[in-house]
Length: 333
Ligand code: ADP
Ligand code: MG
Image 1 (cartoon, rainbow, N blue to C red):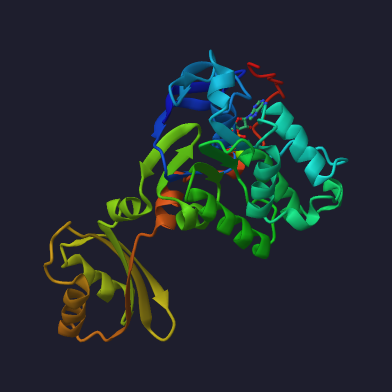
Image 2 (cartoon, rainbow, N blue to C red):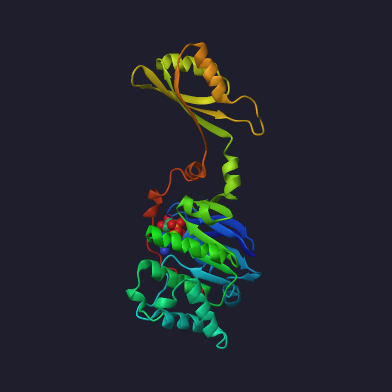
């Protein structure tokens, strides 16, 4: 339904989107996850026809966004990072204005507006000036404009940024409801956000796609690594001596803890579909054999959080202020 092929966007010498390709299928919620500066907004702006690409193409339901923008755009509703709201208008005036821009059929207009206002829970404030609304309500107005014309695909750029926890819950709820009838692509730099609402996660870093899978598969993929921490009553040398004898352990570190104890962290590579002995059991017997009491033993699997951190390791902050010269790009329309 949406095909992004070999997309490249360069700002001067800086490559913001670097040969990005992916497909978005009908009816699912896709999460575009990446630290600040990863290239999420740039990609979304190109996909929605607000920015031109340096190379590559975007095909939306068979229409090329570059050569057939009107047609391609009619399939998409877009909530940009900074929604273009006219704050001196009332909610209703603004939405009517968007209806005119999107050529909404006059006969269906009143019903459509009522439905959308109800969906995003703006009916009660429809006659208020946008500038007097809270950030959460303004974001709903942004969502409402994206929904006008009931496009099949809704693209939301960081829809919950800057909202308070209650507003975040409300917007997420709205997204879940929208997902029943729309294909959704939303971006976020917060893992838990995409994890909660998305069927498929695409992790983007420095303009490249570094992972693309369901949240479950992403987690499973890296589950081969198991991390164990333990606290044993004994000197670090003694603990190391025992750990060395266990071949399943791929790496470990030991440090002095209080009261003559040693704290150790170790990783083992668990063989997939291998239900051999639990390494904790081996550790228990090994330490018992040397008469070193184990005071604590805990095991953790890699979480999606770890995967995200691993894939985007030398991350975010460096990139945030990278804007070299502020190249203005009027886009292709
Ligand atoms: P994200 O939305 O993932 O935070 P962006 O797509 O906004 O990332 O930015 C990707 C990279 O492109 C960043 O390094 C950013 O500084 C750079 N960038 C974005 N817009 C411009 C611009 N108009 N001029 C120059 N560099 C830009
Ligand atoms: Mg962004």
